[in-house]
Amino acid sequence: MLLVSRVMLLDDRRAFAALVEQHQPAIRRFFLHQTMGDEMLSDDLAQETFIKLYYSIKQFKGLSHFSTWLYRIAYNVFQDYLRRNKATESSDSIPEGATTPHCDTQMDINRAMQQLNPTERATITLYYIEDRKVEDVASILQLPVGTVKSHLSRGRNKLAEFLKNNGYE
Amino acid sequence: MNNDTTPRNDEKSIRQFLTTHKHEPRPNKWFAQRVVNKLPDNTSSACKIVMCVATLIAVVLCGVLLYLSPQYILMPRENNITISLLSIYTAMISTVILVALQVIRLIKTYF
Image 1 (cartoon, each protein chain N blue to C red):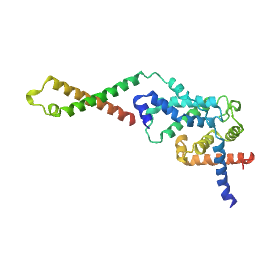
Image 2 (cartoon, rainbow over the protein chains, first blue to last red):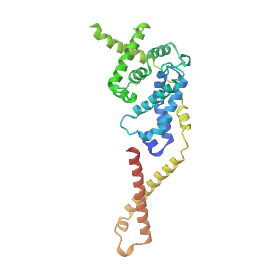
Image 3 (cartoon, rainbow over the protein chains, first blue to last red):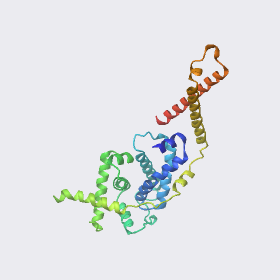
Image 4 (cartoon, helix red, strand yellow):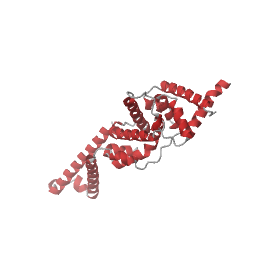
Protein backbone atom coordinates (compact mmCIF):
# COMPACT_ATOMS: atom_id res chain seq x y z
CA MET A 1 0.00 0.00 0.00
CA LEU A 2 2.96 2.27 0.73
CA LEU A 3 4.24 1.66 -2.80
CA VAL A 4 0.82 2.57 -4.24
CA SER A 5 0.79 5.82 -2.23
CA ARG A 6 4.31 6.69 -3.38
CA VAL A 7 3.34 6.18 -7.02
CA MET A 8 0.11 8.15 -6.57
CA LEU A 9 1.58 11.10 -4.71
CA LEU A 10 5.12 11.39 -5.98
CA ASP A 11 4.97 9.58 -9.34
CA ASP A 12 7.84 7.55 -7.89
CA ARG A 13 9.21 5.32 -10.68
CA ARG A 14 11.21 3.12 -8.32
CA ALA A 15 8.10 2.45 -6.27
CA PHE A 16 6.22 1.67 -9.48
CA ALA A 17 8.96 -0.75 -10.59
CA ALA A 18 8.76 -2.44 -7.17
CA LEU A 19 4.97 -2.63 -7.52
CA VAL A 20 5.33 -4.27 -10.95
CA GLU A 21 7.95 -6.66 -9.60
CA GLN A 22 5.63 -7.62 -6.74
CA HIS A 23 2.55 -8.30 -8.87
CA GLN A 24 3.99 -9.44 -12.22
CA PRO A 25 4.12 -13.21 -11.46
CA ALA A 26 0.40 -13.34 -10.64
CA ILE A 27 -0.65 -11.21 -13.62
CA ARG A 28 1.57 -13.10 -16.07
CA ARG A 29 0.24 -16.40 -14.68
CA PHE A 30 -3.35 -15.15 -15.09
CA PHE A 31 -2.68 -14.32 -18.75
CA LEU A 32 -0.84 -17.62 -19.33
CA HIS A 33 -4.04 -19.43 -18.44
CA GLN A 34 -6.25 -17.11 -20.51
CA THR A 35 -4.02 -17.50 -23.58
CA MET A 36 -3.51 -21.22 -22.94
CA GLY A 37 0.22 -21.01 -22.43
CA ASP A 38 1.24 -18.37 -24.98
CA GLU A 39 4.16 -16.78 -23.10
CA MET A 40 4.90 -13.94 -25.52
CA LEU A 41 1.28 -12.86 -25.74
CA SER A 42 0.93 -13.16 -21.94
CA ASP A 43 3.95 -10.94 -21.38
CA ASP A 44 2.67 -8.36 -23.87
CA LEU A 45 -0.75 -8.28 -22.22
CA ALA A 46 0.82 -8.10 -18.74
CA GLN A 47 2.95 -5.17 -19.91
CA GLU A 48 -0.15 -3.42 -21.28
CA THR A 49 -1.88 -4.04 -17.94
CA PHE A 50 0.88 -2.37 -15.94
CA ILE A 51 1.04 0.60 -18.30
CA LYS A 52 -2.73 1.03 -17.91
CA LEU A 53 -2.23 0.71 -14.16
CA TYR A 54 0.27 3.56 -14.24
CA TYR A 55 -2.14 5.87 -16.06
CA SER A 56 -5.14 5.02 -13.89
CA ILE A 57 -3.55 4.52 -10.46
CA LYS A 58 -4.97 7.84 -9.24
CA GLN A 59 -8.46 6.42 -9.72
CA PHE A 60 -7.73 3.72 -7.12
CA LYS A 61 -9.89 4.59 -4.11
CA GLY A 62 -8.87 1.71 -1.88
CA LEU A 63 -12.43 0.33 -1.79
CA SER A 64 -11.18 -3.11 -2.80
CA HIS A 65 -7.83 -4.82 -2.34
CA PHE A 66 -5.20 -3.43 -4.71
CA SER A 67 -4.59 -6.84 -6.32
CA THR A 68 -8.34 -7.22 -7.01
CA TRP A 69 -8.30 -3.86 -8.76
CA LEU A 70 -5.20 -4.87 -10.74
CA TYR A 71 -6.85 -8.13 -11.85
CA ARG A 72 -9.83 -6.08 -13.05
CA ILE A 73 -7.51 -4.02 -15.26
CA ALA A 74 -5.89 -7.26 -16.50
CA TYR A 75 -9.28 -8.79 -17.30
CA ASN A 76 -10.34 -5.63 -19.19
CA VAL A 77 -7.07 -5.71 -21.15
CA PHE A 78 -7.79 -9.32 -22.12
CA GLN A 79 -11.38 -8.45 -23.11
CA ASP A 80 -10.03 -5.63 -25.32
CA TYR A 81 -7.56 -8.08 -26.86
CA LEU A 82 -10.38 -10.53 -27.63
CA ARG A 83 -12.48 -7.74 -29.17
CA ARG A 84 -9.54 -6.60 -31.32
CA ASN A 85 -9.09 -10.14 -32.61
CA LYS A 86 -12.77 -10.91 -33.04
CA ALA A 87 -12.73 -9.85 -36.67
CA THR A 88 -10.13 -12.43 -37.62
CA GLU A 89 -10.94 -15.32 -35.31
CA SER A 90 -13.63 -16.51 -32.91
CA SER A 91 -13.33 -15.10 -29.37
CA ASP A 92 -12.30 -18.31 -27.63
CA SER A 93 -9.88 -19.60 -30.21
CA ILE A 94 -6.41 -18.44 -29.38
CA PRO A 95 -4.18 -20.11 -32.01
CA GLU A 96 -3.01 -23.47 -30.72
CA GLY A 97 0.31 -23.16 -32.55
CA ALA A 98 1.16 -20.09 -30.51
CA THR A 99 1.24 -22.01 -27.26
CA THR A 100 4.59 -23.30 -26.08
CA PRO A 101 3.98 -26.06 -23.52
CA HIS A 102 7.03 -27.03 -21.48
CA CYS A 103 5.78 -30.57 -20.95
CA ASP A 104 2.82 -32.91 -21.35
CA THR A 105 1.18 -31.77 -18.11
CA GLN A 106 1.03 -28.19 -19.40
CA MET A 107 -0.40 -29.44 -22.69
CA ASP A 108 -3.13 -31.09 -20.63
CA ILE A 109 -4.01 -27.88 -18.79
CA ASN A 110 -4.09 -26.02 -22.11
CA ARG A 111 -6.47 -28.64 -23.50
CA ALA A 112 -8.57 -28.43 -20.35
CA MET A 113 -8.75 -24.62 -20.63
CA GLN A 114 -9.81 -24.92 -24.26
CA GLN A 115 -13.01 -26.63 -23.10
CA LEU A 116 -14.07 -23.35 -21.45
CA ASN A 117 -15.27 -20.07 -22.90
CA PRO A 118 -13.26 -16.92 -21.95
CA THR A 119 -15.51 -15.94 -19.02
CA GLU A 120 -15.50 -19.46 -17.58
CA ARG A 121 -11.75 -19.62 -18.09
CA ALA A 122 -11.23 -16.35 -16.21
CA THR A 123 -13.59 -17.47 -13.43
CA ILE A 124 -11.92 -20.87 -13.02
CA THR A 125 -8.42 -19.33 -13.14
CA LEU A 126 -9.21 -16.72 -10.51
CA TYR A 127 -11.09 -19.09 -8.22
CA TYR A 128 -8.93 -22.21 -8.37
CA ILE A 129 -5.48 -21.06 -9.47
CA GLU A 130 -5.30 -17.56 -7.99
CA ASP A 131 -7.32 -18.68 -4.95
CA ARG A 132 -9.74 -15.74 -4.98
CA LYS A 133 -13.10 -15.65 -3.20
CA VAL A 134 -16.29 -15.71 -5.30
CA GLU A 135 -16.99 -12.09 -4.23
CA ASP A 136 -13.53 -11.02 -5.43
CA VAL A 137 -14.04 -12.84 -8.73
CA ALA A 138 -17.38 -11.06 -9.13
CA SER A 139 -15.70 -7.71 -8.46
CA ILE A 140 -12.90 -8.45 -10.95
CA LEU A 141 -15.20 -9.64 -13.73
CA GLN A 142 -17.79 -6.96 -12.84
CA LEU A 143 -20.54 -9.59 -12.71
CA PRO A 144 -23.12 -10.42 -10.03
CA VAL A 145 -22.05 -13.11 -7.54
CA GLY A 146 -24.82 -15.44 -8.79
CA THR A 147 -23.58 -15.21 -12.37
CA VAL A 148 -20.04 -15.99 -11.25
CA LYS A 149 -21.36 -19.05 -9.39
CA SER A 150 -23.12 -20.21 -12.59
CA HIS A 151 -19.92 -19.76 -14.62
CA LEU A 152 -18.01 -21.67 -11.96
CA SER A 153 -20.52 -24.49 -12.00
CA ARG A 154 -20.56 -24.76 -15.81
CA GLY A 155 -16.77 -24.59 -15.96
CA ARG A 156 -16.48 -27.20 -13.23
CA ASN A 157 -18.79 -29.58 -15.13
CA LYS A 158 -16.81 -29.16 -18.34
CA LEU A 159 -13.50 -29.74 -16.52
CA ALA A 160 -14.89 -32.78 -14.66
CA GLU A 161 -15.98 -34.22 -18.02
CA PHE A 162 -12.53 -33.52 -19.48
CA LEU A 163 -10.78 -35.15 -16.51
CA LYS A 164 -13.00 -38.24 -16.76
CA ASN A 165 -12.38 -38.59 -20.49
CA ASN A 166 -8.63 -38.23 -20.04
CA GLY A 167 -8.14 -40.72 -17.23
CA TYR A 168 -7.55 -38.27 -14.40
CA GLU A 169 -9.98 -40.02 -12.05
CA MET B 1 -25.31 -41.00 -1.52
CA ASN B 2 -23.14 -41.26 -4.61
CA ASN B 3 -24.84 -38.17 -6.07
CA ASP B 4 -23.96 -36.16 -2.95
CA THR B 5 -20.29 -37.05 -3.04
CA THR B 6 -19.73 -36.72 -6.79
CA PRO B 7 -19.68 -32.88 -6.97
CA ARG B 8 -17.37 -32.84 -3.95
CA ASN B 9 -15.08 -35.36 -5.65
CA ASP B 10 -15.19 -33.31 -8.87
CA GLU B 11 -14.28 -30.18 -6.90
CA LYS B 12 -11.38 -32.00 -5.26
CA SER B 13 -10.05 -33.54 -8.47
CA ILE B 14 -10.38 -30.25 -10.39
CA ARG B 15 -8.55 -28.34 -7.67
CA GLN B 16 -5.85 -31.01 -7.56
CA PHE B 17 -5.51 -31.07 -11.35
CA LEU B 18 -5.28 -27.28 -11.65
CA THR B 19 -2.86 -26.95 -8.74
CA THR B 20 -0.46 -29.56 -10.08
CA HIS B 21 -0.72 -28.61 -13.77
CA LYS B 22 -0.94 -24.82 -13.56
CA HIS B 23 1.42 -22.65 -15.59
CA GLU B 24 4.11 -20.75 -13.75
CA PRO B 25 5.69 -17.83 -15.63
CA ARG B 26 9.42 -18.09 -16.16
CA PRO B 27 11.41 -15.61 -14.03
CA ASN B 28 11.94 -12.44 -16.03
CA LYS B 29 14.09 -9.94 -14.15
CA TRP B 30 13.83 -7.34 -16.93
CA PHE B 31 10.04 -7.29 -17.01
CA ALA B 32 9.57 -4.41 -14.54
CA GLN B 33 12.36 -2.38 -16.16
CA ARG B 34 10.80 -2.85 -19.61
CA VAL B 35 7.45 -1.59 -18.29
CA VAL B 36 9.08 1.42 -16.63
CA ASN B 37 10.93 2.24 -19.89
CA LYS B 38 7.59 2.50 -21.68
CA LEU B 39 6.24 5.14 -19.29
CA PRO B 40 6.21 8.83 -20.25
CA ASP B 41 8.96 11.22 -19.18
CA ASN B 42 8.52 12.16 -15.52
CA THR B 43 10.14 15.56 -15.13
CA SER B 44 7.16 16.74 -13.09
CA SER B 45 7.83 14.07 -10.48
CA ALA B 46 11.18 15.74 -9.73
CA CYS B 47 9.29 18.98 -9.03
CA LYS B 48 6.94 17.13 -6.70
CA ILE B 49 9.87 15.61 -4.81
CA VAL B 50 11.57 19.03 -4.52
CA MET B 51 8.31 20.53 -3.17
CA CYS B 52 7.94 17.75 -0.60
CA VAL B 53 11.55 18.13 0.53
CA ALA B 54 11.20 21.94 0.72
CA THR B 55 8.05 21.60 2.81
CA LEU B 56 9.76 19.16 5.13
CA ILE B 57 12.81 21.44 5.58
CA ALA B 58 10.56 24.46 6.20
CA VAL B 59 8.53 22.58 8.81
CA VAL B 60 11.70 21.38 10.57
CA LEU B 61 13.23 24.90 10.57
CA CYS B 62 10.04 26.42 11.95
CA GLY B 63 9.94 23.74 14.63
CA VAL B 64 13.55 24.40 15.60
CA LEU B 65 12.97 28.19 15.73
CA LEU B 66 9.88 27.80 17.89
CA TYR B 67 11.70 25.36 20.17
CA LEU B 68 14.78 27.57 20.61
CA SER B 69 13.11 30.93 21.17
CA PRO B 70 9.37 30.57 21.68
CA GLN B 71 9.02 33.78 23.72
CA TYR B 72 10.92 35.90 21.20
CA ILE B 73 8.67 34.68 18.36
CA LEU B 74 5.28 34.18 20.00
CA MET B 75 5.28 37.01 22.57
CA PRO B 76 7.50 39.83 21.31
CA ARG B 77 7.61 43.10 23.18
CA GLU B 78 5.57 45.81 21.44
CA ASN B 79 8.55 48.02 20.66
CA ASN B 80 10.77 45.13 19.69
CA ILE B 81 9.32 43.96 16.35
CA THR B 82 12.45 43.84 14.24
CA ILE B 83 13.05 43.01 10.59
CA SER B 84 14.39 39.60 11.57
CA LEU B 85 11.22 38.88 13.51
CA LEU B 86 9.09 39.95 10.52
CA SER B 87 11.14 37.63 8.28
CA ILE B 88 10.53 34.77 10.71
CA TYR B 89 6.78 35.47 10.60
CA THR B 90 6.82 35.57 6.79
CA ALA B 91 8.72 32.28 6.67
CA MET B 92 6.26 30.69 9.07
CA ILE B 93 3.23 31.86 7.07
CA SER B 94 4.87 30.52 3.88
CA THR B 95 5.45 27.19 5.62
CA VAL B 96 1.81 27.00 6.70
CA ILE B 97 0.71 27.74 3.10
CA LEU B 98 3.15 25.11 1.76
CA VAL B 99 1.84 22.49 4.20
CA ALA B 100 -1.76 23.43 3.39
CA LEU B 101 -1.08 22.99 -0.35
CA GLN B 102 0.42 19.54 0.27
CA VAL B 103 -2.56 18.54 2.42
CA ILE B 104 -5.00 19.74 -0.28
CA ARG B 105 -3.08 17.72 -2.89
CA LEU B 106 -3.19 14.67 -0.62
CA ILE B 107 -6.96 15.04 -0.08
CA LYS B 108 -7.56 15.55 -3.83
CA THR B 109 -5.57 12.40 -4.61
CA TYR B 110 -7.45 10.17 -2.19
CA PHE B 111 -11.00 11.57 -2.38
